[in-house]
Amino acid sequence: MTDSLPIRTITLENGLLLNFYNRTNRYFGDFHRVLIVVEGSVDAELFLTDEMKQRVENLPGSILYRRQLERMGVTSDRLEETGSELIESFFAASKSYLERPDILEKLLKKRLLEQGKRRVSSLKGKL
Image (cartoon, rainbow, N blue to C red; front, side):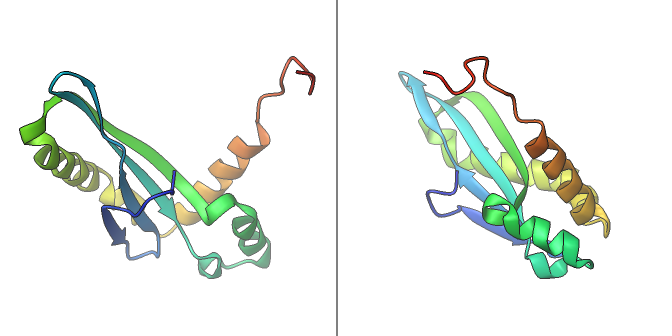
């Protein structure tokens, strides 16, 4: 998802870097789906233990957090305004949670659990 430049970047007090990417698309006439992807990454040096640092370094892009902010049926004249509203609303609702001192370790543990639960294909490698 990081194939383009972020439209906004915010660094939180605990070192979590939030990048906001615009993935808006038109789906019918003058109606658009405004889609903002939020990715939270972190520098491995922020973790206290060497084991945690190594785990973060092995993650692709050190992305610990990803959310999608979406609104359907937006007309062309409201695209920019709607994107800003989605970002501001997300930040107002999530800032206190994402700035907690223990959140980096919790996000890393959750991400590692998700990575370990990858679904095994029923094809078993055969196409």
